[in-house]
Amino acid sequence: MKKLHFIISIFVFTILLGCAGDDSNIDLDGLSAPANLAVLTTVTQDNSGKVTFLPTGEGVTQYKINYGDGTPESDYFSAGATMTHTYKEGVYKAKIVAMGITGKTTEINKDVIVSFNAPANLVVVITNDVSVSKKITVQATADFALFYDVYFGEAGKPEPVSVNNGESVSYTYKEAGVYTVRVVSKSAAIKTVEHTEQVTAKLIVNPTASAPVPPTRLDANVISIYSSKYKDVEGTNFNPNWGQSGSLSEFELAGDKMLNYTNLNYQGIAFADGVKLDVSAMDYIHLDVWTADLEKLAIFLISNNKINGERPVTKDLVANQWTSIDIPISAFTSQDGFTVADIFQLKLVGTPDGKNIYLDNIYFYKLPAESVALPLDFESANLTFAWSGFGNVDASVVKNPDKTGANVSDKVVKIDKKSGAETWGGASLNLESTPDFSKGTKVKVNVWSPKAGVDILYKMEVSTSPKDGNGNPTVFIEVHATTTVANAWNVLTFDLTSAANFSTSNKYDRVILFPDFGKGGTGDTYYFDDIKQSN
Image 1: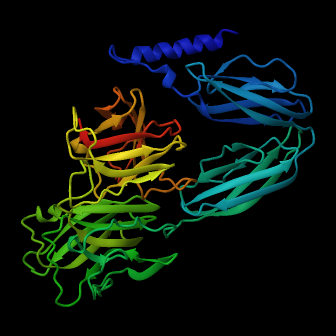
Image 2: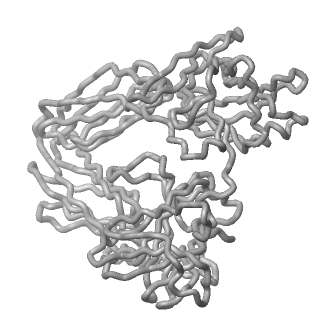
Image 3: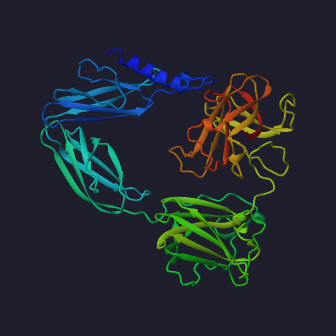
């Protein structure tokens, strides 16, 4: 049994070798130690003190437990298995050690309360999620208790969910409605304590956050119908009497106004009398849609010429979040010779009908002749490349100080990682157009470094994605590469597909460069140029 951990590691390692191709390299040193460890501790209600441990974590092949009562620790046991131990009455601090395939370990401590008194002073708090429909969170705490069971009261779900005393658990119901939630608090005693409560799983029918802010565009490149970012076409009627079943109101969220159509079947948007929009020079129509229950929305452009008629494009919607829709104008004009020189109305048709939507940022736009977008070579005299340094790092576009070798262009980005700069110091640039990944999912960057062997981190973010606790976007990718020469230009390749959360559907609109990532600044200067996609 003492050899179990060694045998499991060799077994998993052998599997990895078998899955790797002949030309593949397995970087075991690059694998992280186990992460996100947790452990559920339950105890039988028979005054025996028998406690069961169920540890969980990421990147774990096996666990062992120091029970904290002076008895020998357990042997290693496999991930997904449980371990039991019988305690005398008391409070103990157990230690759970998790090992990964490389032998790296991570550990957590867990207080184990073994009491032969029944739980007392049970407090149960049940809350509705403010942004996810039909989701509730339960938290229960009681004296002497080790854990509690929750019965959520949904048909077909008779089994409870076990939770450590004082911790919380969330549950999302299939349907909105009233449910009976039963909480059973348990110690090592035979007697348990219960709490029953009627809970309403609520359907969230309005957004709790604003739609993404549209990018800055030249007036000549936008025809806006409804937005606070651009100047709107005047006199638009957002609720003409077309005999539709739905109704319109203007919903306001923290000062941000948006259109709300309820009981939607079809809905017209009519421009002022005599106003006909020629959108043939535009590239896209954009709108942001939020819904709790509508599956599809058809967007129609309607011509003032009855013979020309109208054409739809239908888009799928994602419930309980903003769906940003960009439809090429060509998707309309490719339908039976439809022309868009005299658009005087829009129409929206929901599937299924009778649902509820919120709309914001309805506008036509065209892409500028030049924009800050990949590929980036910094040679344009018409664009402003507004690099922003952070972590005691400065960044700016300058003349190429070393027009030799792999880079003889005139302008490059200079990044000074000053003495005392943060290990995570770098510089960012907002893109005006997001990458088209049909052009390649690798990014090549020309780098001039004063040292070889320097780690360069390339990052892309969706700036409008939800923020983490530090205010950083939560949708991003990070890829590393290492410089190979000193005091000369060398081209580094960053394979975006190597990032686990990379998706070609994400609209990455920010590029970030981190020179000598993970090390504090020592006053070195780096140069970057020719950031471009490749296959």
